[in-house]
Length: 116
Length: 115
Image (cartoon, rainbow over all chains, first blue to last red; front, side):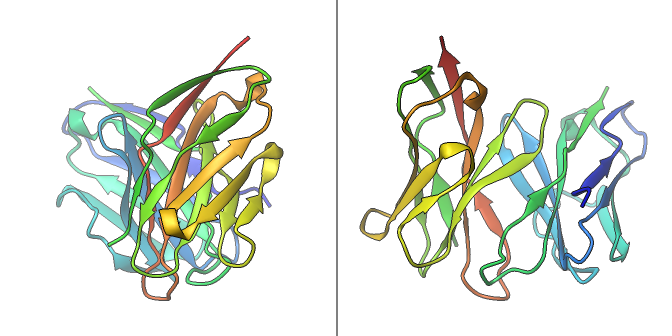
């Protein structure tokens, strides 16, 4: 298995531009998670999906952020408009199921976003 | 709500020395506990996990961790570190029930290895 795939690996954009981050979870995993990692705030859960349905988006910082999962093999995290304070590493993770002994999340390599 | 505390922000250890990274959690029921490692520029990799049973769990790369319910701790240990162990280590706690699938991560401990 190729693991969780994220693209792009690096993104540099200017303030006000739209940014779209992409994630392909591990095949057969029911859960998909989006995290943001910064020096100041550490690793924060933004949103997670179960079977393509958003379950908890309480970590999404504001309306400029949105996430979708149109099918079991693809998810996007969009920031519109982007701001310099959105600069961070964004991780996608997937899990086969949770609440049991398979409650383990597999992380992608991350997308490093820089907003100028 | 669950929470995790990693009291050591940065630890420096000589190569070949033993290592212990501390993790304390707060959760009202039986927790799931995890240690992840993050090398520079990489994603998080699972080192080991505890769900139930034996409180001493073995992981990859020679790491182990011990769950101590009375102390609400899940400290990570390695008897002899290698230069390749230099990385950031995250402890995480998860809920033991469906309907709460979040993992809560600690702030991490950065490990530096000196020759």
